[in-house]
Every structure is written in structure tokens, then in C-alpha cells.
Picture 1 (cartoon, rainbow, N blue to C red):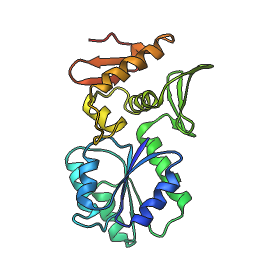
Picture 2 (picture 1 turned 60 degrees about the vertical axis):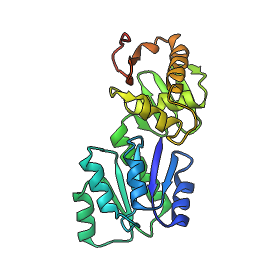
Picture 3 (picture 1 turned 120 degrees about the horizontal axis):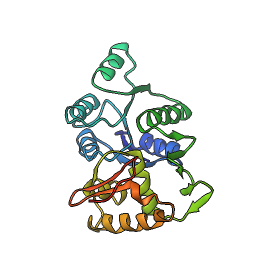
Picture 4 (picture 1 turned 30 degrees about the vertical axis):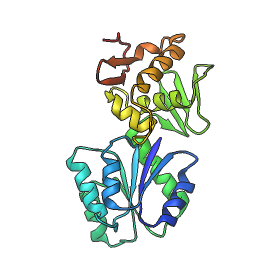
Length: 228
């Protein structure tokens, strides 16, 4: 899973990366406008957001995200500990609010909690889709008692599809999420990896759940589908 950290204190930002890095892939931004730009890619499972940021404060970042109907869960992580600050944070759309200084374990627990609420099926580092299970920590996949061999990007693609089941994901979204929007390759690689992923799932008839929307993208559907 992918977490965006928007925090101008580089030491603290790196500390957060160390705290959650075993469970989550992380991307860092160090000022408000950069953080908003990255968040608007809509490819993250959660955002950790400071309030007092250069160029654009965290309240305005979150307000703009919600205005654009981006519902990514957000934890405010801030030194602003007044009750009015907290109320305002929740009113602009925060899912949680944690005051600095904080315990690393508490941040991790809160992050896991909002991911569970938003994604569903996430329990003890396991993502599930029917009998298919992904272990996020050790990057393994199983269906029933059988282990499925997936390379790194195939695993990441399947994880992203499960996290967003029954939602159409464009090829651009998938490319930005799995390869990174600054990658030097092109988004045609998405089609190649989607095809390989289907082949690896075909033995178990799970390829039928990946629906192609030609010219647009892909969706993991809970009901078996035929591709258009």
C-alpha cells in the first residue's frame, strides 16, 4: 500500500518513513503545493498531512482535495493541539488527528485503522479477494493452499486492483501508482503486466475477475466477467 507524507520537517518525515516503511510504500512531499499536486494523482491509500506547511497550509490542501472529490483518508499530524484546531481539521475532511510529539506505535496503529476502514479486507497485513490472499509484508500471494508466483510489479498491480475492487482504474492511474509518474517508461507497460497477471491467475479461474475497459483501464469485479 502507498502512503503520501506531506511534512516540511525532513527529519520528522524520514522518521515517519522508518516507522511505517515495513508495511507501506511511502512518498514524501515537503511543502503544501507539492503535496497537493501529488495527492491529486489519487493513487494513495492514505495521506499523513502536516498543517503548518510552506506555500499552502494543510487545511487548504485538504479542502482542495475534498473539493475535487478525492476521498483518500487523511491523518493530520501537527503541533496545533487546540480543540478549535482539531474541530476545524475534522470539518475540512480529516479522518484522524494526531498531535506532535507522538509515539511511533500510535501513528502506525492509527494509520492501519484508517486503511482497514477505507480498504476493507485488510487484517494483519493480509489483503483478501475471495480465496486470493496477498501478504503485504512479505509480498506473497496464495489461492487456497497454492502459492502464486508474481513478480514485484504484478504483485503491486494486483494489490492496487484489490484495494479498489469494483472501481475502474485508468491506465494512467495504474502507471502512476505502480511505476511512478516520473518513470521513464510509458503506460503501455500496464497492458503487458495486466496480461501477464491474467495468465498467472488463469489456472485458478481468477483471470475472469479482471475486466478490461478498452482505451480506458481495468477493474477487479467481484462477479466473474467477460472482457469487452
